[in-house]
Length: 168
Length: 168
DNA sequence: TCCAATTCGTTAGCATGCTACTCAGTGTGG
DNA sequence: CCACACTGAGTAGCATGCTAACGAATTGGA
Image (cartoon, rainbow over all chains, first blue to last red; front, side, top):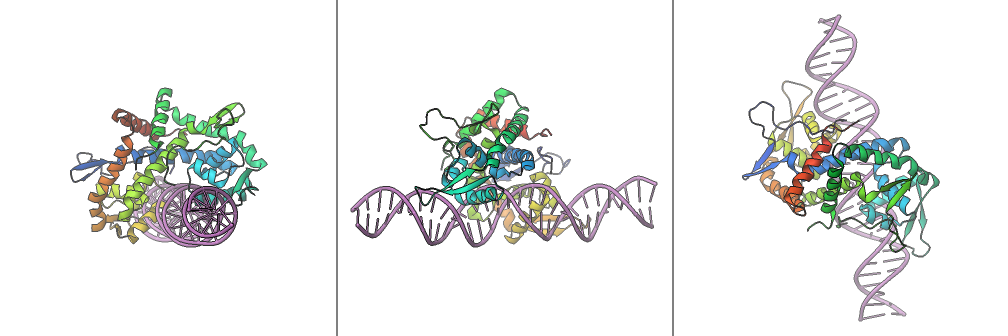
C-alpha cells in the first residue's frame, strides 16, 4: 500500500445516504472523526515515509529515536533510553540487540553500578547523523508543507498537550 | 511504563544550557519539536488507552478498526477491509485469523467470485458494539478534554489534511 | 549491619505492522 | 477461445511494540 490518503467509506456508494457511522444506543461513532483513528493513520504515514528514508542506511524506524538521543548524549543507559524514548525496557533490549548486530552501538558495563549497561555509539553510528538528520527533517518539512506554518505550530502544540500527563 | 508525558531530556540536567538538539552540519533537529515524534507518541498513548478499555472484552487494538468497519457494513471482503483500514493484506489476514479464533467473525467464501472471502460478524462480534463504542468514545473525549473544543476540531482537521494524498 | 524494597537488564510469549513472494481464480484483448 | 495480466488470499520472515515474570545488583531503613 503506497496510498495513505483517507480511504474508502465502509458503506456502499449510492445506497442513498452515506452513513460511515456506527450507531450504538443512540450514540454515533464516526470513524473518520475519531481522534485515535486520525492520529494512528498519521503516525503510520509518517513512520512509513521515514522508514523509506532510513532504509538505504539500514536503520530501522525503531532505532531512529534511540540514535537521536544518543547523538545528543552518548553513553546513556538502557533504562535512561527507555524512559526518554518512552519505550518499555524489553522493547529497548531487543532494539539495542539489533543495533549492536548492525554495528551502530556497543554495550559497555557501567563500572560504578553492576546493574547498568551503557550504550555507546560506534564510529558508524555516530557518522550516520549527518546523513540521516537532513532526511528526517525533510520528511517532517514535506508533510508540514501541506498546511501553513502557523497551522504546523498549532498542530505540534496540540499534540504535545495531549502528551502532558494523560488523565487516568 | 504508565507515564505517557513528554519524557526526560537527553542532555544532562544542570550542565548549563539545555541542548536537546542534534546539530548536524549547522542544522538543528530538536526531537521534541519533530512532527513525527509527536504524532508517534500521541498515537501510542491513545492506542495504549484504547487497548486498556478493549482488554476486558478480549478485543485487540488491531481488531478494533476492523470491527468498526464491519459494524458499518457486515460482509466486507478482506481486500476491501485492508483498503479501508489502510492495512496491508498480509496484516489483515492474520488479524482476521485472530478474530476468527476469538469467535468475533467467520470467513465465508463469496459465491460469485472464487478469489474473495467475505468476513461476517458472529453474534458475539455484533453484540460487542454497544459495549465497546462508548468506551472508545470516552477515550477520545477524555483526551480531547485537555484542549478546547475548538482546538480539538482544529487538531482533527489538520491531521486529516496530512493524510490526504501525501506527496511522493 | 542486614533485610526488604527498588532498579536494571533480560527472557518468554504474544499482537500487529511491513515487504517479498506464491498460487488460484477472473477478466481481457487478440 | 486463449494467453496474459490483474486481483485476492495466503505464507514466510522480520521489526517493533506490549505484559508478565525473573535474577542480580543496589539502596534504604530499622
